[in-house]
Amino acid sequence: MSGATTADALASGKGHKDENFPVASVLLKPEHRAPVMAFYRFARGADDVADNPAVSADEKLALLGAMRATILGTRDADAASVALRTTMEAHRISPQHALDLLTAFERDCTVNRCADWAALIDYCRYSAMPVGRYVLDVHGEDQATWPASDALCAALQVINHTQDCAKDYRAIGRVYLPLDLMAQHGARLDDLEKPVATPGLLATIRDLATRSQHLLDESAGFAGQIHDRRLAVEVAIIHRLAVSLTQRLKTRDPLSQRVHHRPYEALGLAALAAVSQTVKGRG
Image 1 (cartoon, rainbow, N blue to C red):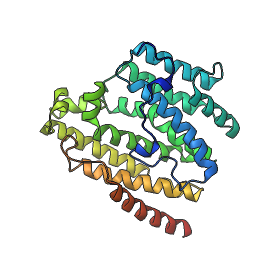
Image 2 (image 1 turned 60 degrees about the vertical axis):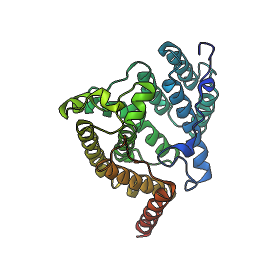
Image 3 (image 1 turned 135 degrees about the horizontal axis):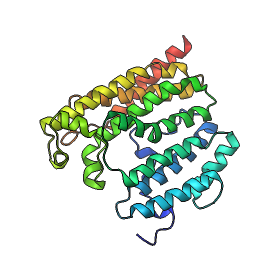
């Protein structure tokens, strides 16, 4: 892939409808969906660069560096980054969220193991929390909502890493499961290559599910802190879906059983959450 000179050349083809949680759903007002999608396209492009197994770390870092320079306005090397920079300028949003996200993807180019829970949460600080903060800024919400948003975003990231642990290891050799937790529960890296999770790996997955639940407990009142009712409903739906996935990770084996929601399951949970939040909003 030495001829690849832009992030577009490494696009995976994955879109916002392929994500595990809603992204800029129709619940959001059109004037808010557009800037959220600009951030998603930027993030998707950077993620595709960092996760491409056919490109060297140096090439990836060069492409991500070009995206960083574009966000900062010193270059126009990447179309998605130019679009996001323009959007942020129009909405007077700090570029720090985008820069923080790039830090996470730059780490992915050279770091493929996670030492402990603190390291995983630090990674979430750059890979997940900026997303929620950006969305809140787009809606003009108070920064007092950031702690609850950070907890929810971290939970979503840990859930994704846990349910996709085998796929991440097999496809790109990356392990987000904290190595100290794996050792504590008697799990080995090669357990991720097995068709069925070993007892040690299952114990690690259950441990992470419990920690995810604690983060979800911290963010339980997040939707109620949001002034924009449509965003509040979307957040309530995301939270409900995350709680359900966490419960599945406590009882299912992601190596041999389905954890992801089927469309009708997600729709049912979303409807329940939307009705519940709408009733609360009217109270």
